[in-house]
Length: 415
Image: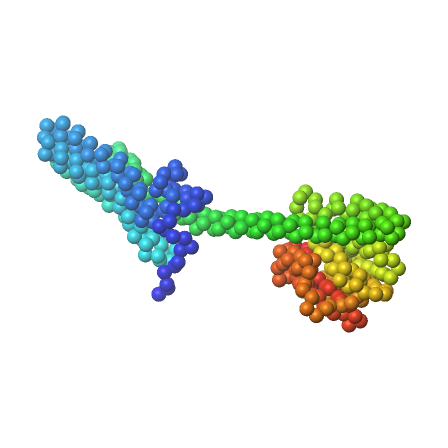
């Protein structure tokens, strides 16, 4: 025997507004709950019973006034009130008992339909009993039961049979509506509505995560941009008195660099898009400024193929590594120094990786040196953008100096 199924939601909890449908679509307070749950059933019974019971009791009042018999009116009234109450109660109660059992969905669906049909037939039988009792008090020649026996046995002429069957269909239709048959549509459609609700929540969660990631990236990039600008201005300031002509060249180079790069850093206030070739161009501009500042002792080499240059690449990450190489490797070194940038593909197919590296032959890693803001910033941006699909590696180079490399799964860059 299979284990009872576990619902992905609690029957006793109100449904979200985009899941709750109800049998009439009116949004009444009972329709916020799952069809044929206990909360749905007793709320529905209270609402419809408040209408059905007085209506049934009114039949007793009418009979008592007509027959001038209080006791007969009371007898008819409580029977009619009970019959109308059962009309709105039996089907939902039987359905709630089925749902409470927690059977497998196909079995449960058949059992719920059976429960509603059973409730409709039982409530209709109570109505026939009440009509028979009323007919007996009124001295009718044929009771309701006897009339239906003659209808189904063919003892009446065709037009009488058609008339009575029409009344039967109308009565069963009313009992079906009162007994929860309309709720079957909402019940059968409930799993689909929950799936769509869950999908919408997941999409909204992803959207919120994306917005948070973009906000985080904006903060991180805002930390990088002034950092580069302040360092560049400090370089200009240092050259004003020592070599005014060189300072002038630095200002011109810096202005040209900012004019061509800043408009591309933050389009529309969002996390900017860029290619690897654009990031190499930004780094070249920065390094040319550094060459003007440091003189011929600094040499640079940038190599990226045209094909790899078209690959999407996050902005400013490479510039942070270049700045770090110049500031902590080249500037403290006495004598010539070199900074080289390159890119290459590792692996093929779905497992292909893009590796971009910045190598310098400066003073190298020093023991006890704490990782700076630039490197920490690069790690944070890679984690926010690509998670485990990207990594940053900083290590000593075999020829001296430091090699910093960013490795990102090519599928992550293209997605």
